[in-house]
Length: 290
Length: 305
Image 1 (tube, each protein chain N blue to C red):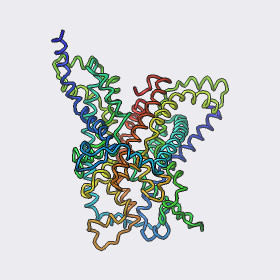
Image 2: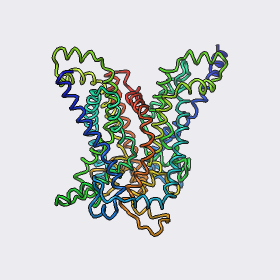
Image 3: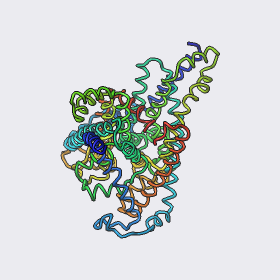
Image 4: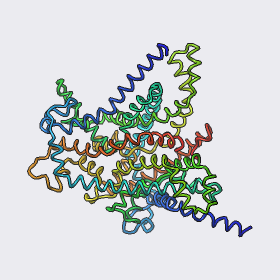
């Protein structure tokens, strides 16, 4: 390694450390802010150096455990149902697309790609889902619109099948008398663990983070998932005071907002490191051909 | 022959059945709303439905384009997207080059883990994070300004700061994500290129400009062209959540998507919102077709169709 190389390596580290700090600083601030004393935060503002620590915000949110518990439960149900359904629907459709000799193959491929070119936009989608399918204020509204599958996932899985599942293997299963459904569940699924993890993570994060469907289709606050609770608090900090149960405790308006956000991001922070590689792989696989 | 063909189709029935749920979902979610685009030409009445509502000709569009709104939201959407494309490319390539320089796999992974973290946050959470910095009384920036004896700034009431804030927040969220594809290309480059350049006495900077960038050229052109095709679409979450939907800021934060949302949900103005949504769908379609044609001309296998 020559000197120029070493210098550049050092420069790389300096830049990357700087950008890394920029990336995590807001999270650090959020956590510190959530542990700051309300009175101190109001007079001095949040600060990067932890001072006047207090757990008041969390103790206040604990009195709202019911609200957050329900939000978490709804988000969990929606995320799990949506992700499982998406994996099945996407895999099955992509399996069909990847069959050699499939009749109308050109039509099906176009059918998928066209959805990336042209869409009806919010107004007609909204009117269709509310007027024709009556999803307003039901859990369906959080699962169905836009998130269940899309051309991006379908193409990604189709390409995976094409390059990772040998046709001879499927043919052998067919000769042994295995039905198409049997081949799909007993041969294709077990061979597809990496792509299932990739798509599952992307879809799971999309469902967990989704607040738009809730914003469009849910008025009933009892059906708010965690993101929509956060959104409601963001629009009006007083939202936290609704629903009673806080007892004599006064709401620490500024710090409890921050604590609520911390509660909302914890699950992602926990699962993300385990799935990071799949996530990176998914972006690489899908983005260029997307 | 006919019998054989029939039998052949029969063989495909189980396969078609597997594809059916996906087919139906795309039909409902992506194709049925296309029919709803005609709402833009109707005087929509919920009780009469799409079909029964009377035609309105082009009056919804006249109404939309008579205001300055149409110009403002189009300008904002396009200008922000252009800035995003430039910054995405510069930062994405730079970060990928720096990351590629790190030979230790574990170190590289740690950097990447942190750089990707912002991308995993919902825009609601991003809005909280931004507020922790920008808030009037509690924001860390105003805390700092007051402590050095300067006047605090009401960020959520002053338009002039927002183009920079939105660019910063967007890049903050996308920097790790944007570098992944470039990094994947760089990892695939044959190391012997650099070795022979080194033997010839090329400096690091020369290696980057003479070897790395030319090798990234086709990826850059691809990604830029794809983003150009989406120039009339905006990230609703970014423009709705981060400025916290503050009316005073609309002049610089309103895009076609936030405008459609507000016209539909807050004002219940179906005529205006459907006209804006229709306008967006059409110009989007045209730009995507143009840029896809360009990609196909440049490198056929990268085109969408």
